[in-house]
Amino acid sequence: MPFRSRYTGLIDRYRDRLPVHDDTRIISLGEGNTPLIRLHHIPDIIGKDVDIYVKYEGLNPTGSFKDRGMTMAVTKAVEEGSKAIICASTGNTSAAAAAYAARAGITAFVLIPEGKIAQGKLAQAMMHGSVVIQIQGNFDEGMALVKQVADHAPVTIVNSINPYRLQGQKTAAFEIVEELGRAPDYHCLPVGNAGNITAHWIGYCEYSSAGGEVTKACKFCDGNCRFAGGAIVGNRPKMVGYQAAGSAPFMRGKMVDDPETVATAIRIGHPQSWDYAWQVQKESGGWFDECSDELILAAQKLLAEKEGVFCEPASATSLAGAMRDIKSGKIPEGSSVVCTLTGHGLKDPDTAIAQSTAPLINIKPTLDAVKHAILDNLN
Ligand SMILES: *Cc1c(COP(=O)(O)O)cnc(C)c1O
Image 1: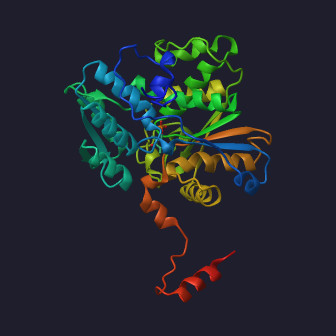
Image 2 (image 1 turned 180 degrees about the horizontal axis):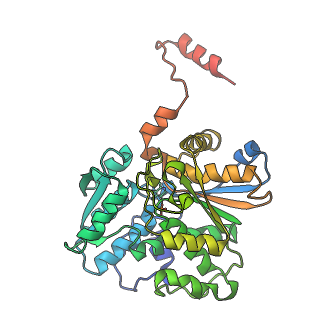
Image 3 (image 1 turned 60 degrees about the horizontal axis):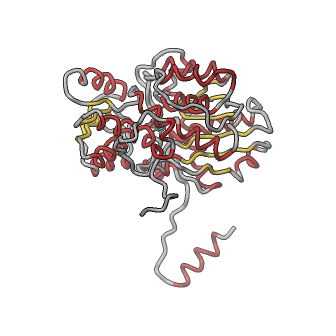
């Protein structure tokens, strides 16, 4: 008998709030239940009295939050008899699709932009045995193709336009509320397709008691969300979405055809959840903003050096934007802020090494040389 407390993934944990049946075969790798880490040094560095937490989604089984959505999408695909799944991806969706397809014993087809996905993600898609299709185009072009081909071949799309993805991803908001005992005042996320910011808002709304808002929020899930009651909190956060400056359709107010950024996971010019995300911004009273690649990389490095948390560049966009808005007072002192760190730093070692300024010390293998290396570098 397994221990009753053994953690078996987010569908098991939030079964009553997700569209599964008692006899549904759950395809899980133990995703979810990620740490909410309170930052100790960065608030001092900013010089403001704020509580900043990072939700370290890089600790999911394939190293990104995509696992939350993929456990639901693949579980439902299998339940519906599908033998193959397909997605377009900037990397992390393909890694998750490949792993969950392997777990389920079905085939994953992944379309990725040639030369524009981080090495770790490519390694994952290949190792898990998915069929990797590289296109000479960007994510948006891949997405358009995937939507078309699904009408011509027996494959289930597992991009975030698959409604089960958002259902799985909303559980991150549940975890945060349960851990803090309330919703934070601000929740900051990097935005690409804007599925995740939408999913978090669904989750917060379902947890909130505010005058009938629970039913209202369920328009996102066509009313098939079965959550009713449970622990209720009164507040919901302002949702803040940050984009990379070279890939910021929400700032431009229209689609961007040639998105470019070092944060490849959010190199998306035609967000699939465009309308939902604007609705989230309006309903929550939050905002969108953009960060330069330099600011994003600086935040990634600061977080790794000062807090011991390593995330990929796209993930650091949430912290980069939050730090700027805290400094300027747009996010006022006394606030609680959660920044989602969407993916693990090891996903993209090339970018990390290229921007690191840490000296590599080369010495002869002698005691004297090691001793000097230490004494010369003690603070
Ligand atoms: C997918 C992804 C995002 C963007 O999420 P959306 O739901 O597309 O807005 C951000 N960061 C990382 C690391 C991702 O993998």
